[in-house]
Image (cartoon, rainbow, N blue to C red; front, top):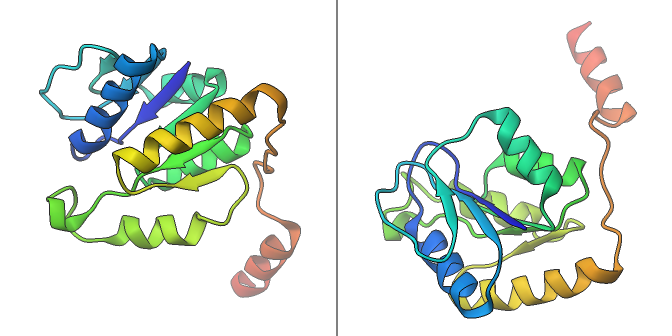
Length: 159
């Protein structure tokens, strides 16, 4: 199963339409949390909003996670060692109030398990690569805790 999430603040129909088309073409099993999006999608299962507990469960069960550049999803997918495809929202398309997701995506594009895409074609290529890799590769997970060095520095700062 592929889990897609766009967060709760704004719709991200460019991403959801691309995933829907891909699922229709390839017969993919997709569940998407689509936010306040009133569109109808014929090839994927959708819910506008799900609880944080359910989102966590979907990420745990997914072969692949596709998302906007939201930190919660990035952290959770990394904790579970899930391959993650990020498509950042663009201000120029009216998808967000500014381009901070572009900066977030750029920061994480070199991280293990994370692929950043910008359009429908690169999304399709990334899904193909990720699903092929899932078959024979263990994705590395990160600790649920911050590294000791960071904790040490924070303690110094707070002392």
